[in-house]
Image (cartoon, rainbow, N blue to C red; front, side, top):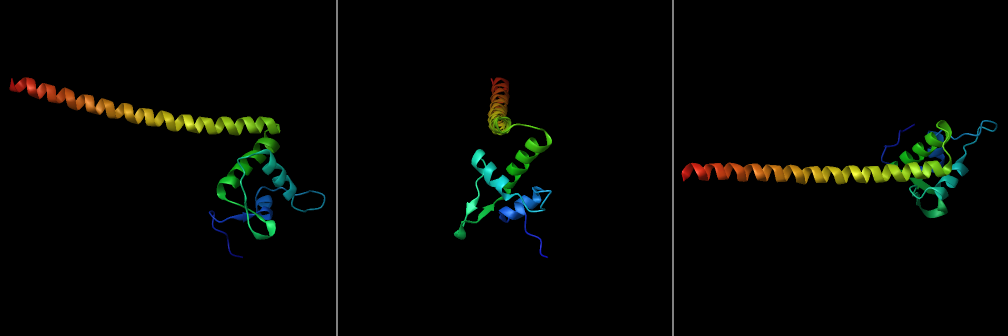
Length: 126
């Protein structure tokens, strides 16, 4: 059987299998769990093509993995996971803002150093 590329969209059944969302009594995949999470978490955005079939990209699958881990392994509530995902996102935004501030700070330092060196050279001439 051919392995799908990681960037390829996956069906809801494939995602349920990857997340090990299986009904232990019947052995069937619990795809309804993913549809429920989809309603609860706006971060999950499946593509819905003809026939109303859902397909998930890598970003949505990664988010679903986090949700499953936090709910099933860590015992978070739905609201707890929502807060975690929002805080995680704002943390990432803060990180990128800080890095851009640091970059501009380094640029300023570099420019000041160049100006300082120019002033020293001018003083030597005079």
